Length: 197
Image (tube, rainbow, N blue to C red; front, side):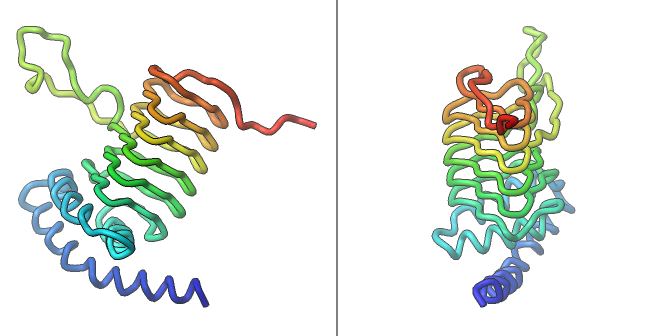
């Protein structure tokens, strides 16, 4: 019965999110999908409480690639790239900034987590050219299933499945499956991999 009620609520919020999707689509035609994602993300991030949680889940289900509606996206969380995928059972805490990424099932992101679109977003090799004119490369960062990113973590590289990234860590290199990492730059501190018996 509980799952039926949740399904009905999700359907209602999908209908409520439809006008936002129309606005997003029109802006996408005029300015591109990334700009529309940034703009509409700012708007839907401001709805408080459970209303906001359900509205954001419905909105991102409509506008992002392969995104589940069975997610929790906290107040004030912003998305900057359209090419983002959020799988089933993902929790994204408040005040996060999410770039171009793929978040696999059952991941937990604490408050204030930033997932950048890789570590090559800004070139800075030519001191005679202003930084804003040097461009960069956006790459999709993958967060493996059932991983936990602690509050304030900054992630610029892939994180394997079933990992723990300590609060405040700065991830600049790929993290192997089952690893527990922490620090700046993040280093492997331990493993969650079950010991063979």
